[in-house]
Amino acid sequence: MRLFTFTCPLCGAQRQRFPMRTAWKRRAQVSCRECGIDVRSDPPLGTYLLYVLYAEVITLLASLALVVAYVTSKWAWLGAIWLVAIVLCWFPGAIRHARSPIVRAMPDPNRSYARRPSTDGIAEPKQGRSAS
Ligand SMILES: [Zn+2]
Image (cartoon, rainbow, N blue to C red; front, top):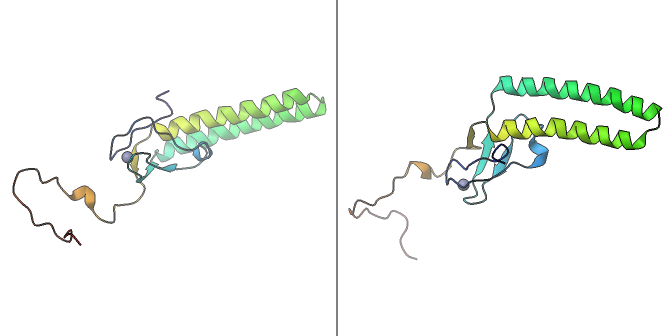
């Protein structure tokens, strides 16, 4: 199910997913399971507008079908139509988020991503990390 999952841009932890309730939103945000940073999806605006249009068509069709089912007292159909409409709106929304570029929700306040690992053997002064 790679359609619904994404990889963390910082630590590379795979098979993460956004919460179900964020599928309808413009952007989805979640904390990485491994490193804990907040990442969000960044889908293009055009994709979002297409999705909104699609969801509105689905909602319109579903509401018409719901009215027919209500008038004819077919209660099982009422529930089934409701469920199908939710699923039809949720799947493209979740895929849209997971397949879009994943970026950090906010810039790192410590700028730690700019720090390079010092593995070249030269002893660097450990600033502010003295043993207490
Ligand atoms: Zn991570």
